[in-house]
Length: 140
Image 1 (cartoon, rainbow, N blue to C red):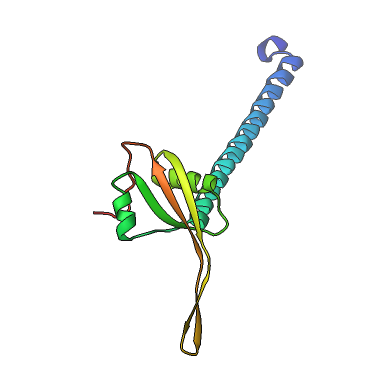
Image 2: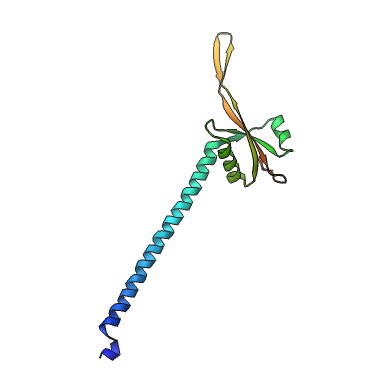
């Protein structure tokens, strides 16, 4: 009968390999889930970076003239730096950033007769993109 069904050792090996394969599949699926989780975390970090850094594009006569040269003006968060602005622009618009200039405008106080008011301060970034590339600020 052992010739027909095989020896006990062979049966044990076959069951062990089947169990081993299922364990390998479980490990692979865990790795896949971890990898997917890391990718989603990266995307969330990028979207958070974009939302935190770029507040809005500046729409003025001067800013619109600069777009012909390849420079775009954005109002950015008060706690961001040039590198973060460059990363956010590249992630959001998919262009290569060559240079970023940042200007910080202080809070101003105004007075009209007896009424005192404040104009909030902000940070403005002028982003220069690679020649031949452009950013579509307004949908046509």
